[in-house]
Image 1 (cartoon, rainbow, N blue to C red):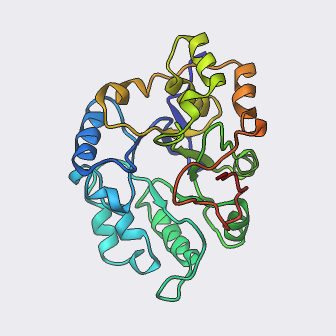
Image 2 (image 1 turned 90 degrees about the horizontal axis):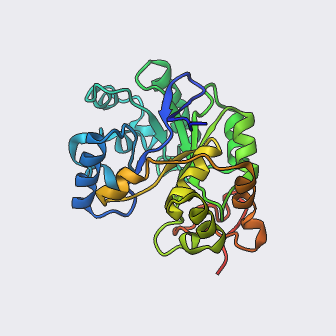
Length: 274
């Protein structure tokens, strides 16, 4: 059975199942990688505030415009949104609900993002690095349910409880660092290597396929053209193999790999191990 190329968001919009991650790429490499990806079928490019300028003018600089309440709904916001002719998705890149230097909380940022969505300026809005406790607090105030929640996600950090909560509320999970980031042990894990051998693919393909089979948007990062192409070639995994991958964390391999350690004191299950 062929895997989906897109997932349907709770707004009715479609989002590509696989996007290009750009985190921690060098400036010149990002520009080349984004350009190559767009020319070769990608329509989902994941960027952050520090990366948007590096991705040249291809990607509209939304993160800078909407990362704080003061910038949401200002005269500059509609102008920025009109720059692109492509359907846009706006993500609230927040790591925790806190009070900003202006005295406004991220709830106010979310409220203004809801107004932007209701005005038809974007196809969807979402959050990143939000745990269940913070989502529960947001739930008390939202009038628009987040379309996605982007978090670190891989077999060593499966976040089963978070996925169950998001599934229940119609929020699509989106996985960054799906390969475990640079220097991570995922690619050399014996179970993953054995699975790659079984299917005749690379460990990276197994890890990327794991997320699509799980109904999660996945954002593998690469600046190498051959890997940008191969990262879109996912395969169906058997239910038995999915059980193996979903169970690796419980076998003592659970860990949060990325630094900064998003999740510390933010209500996530604390998987990080020294």
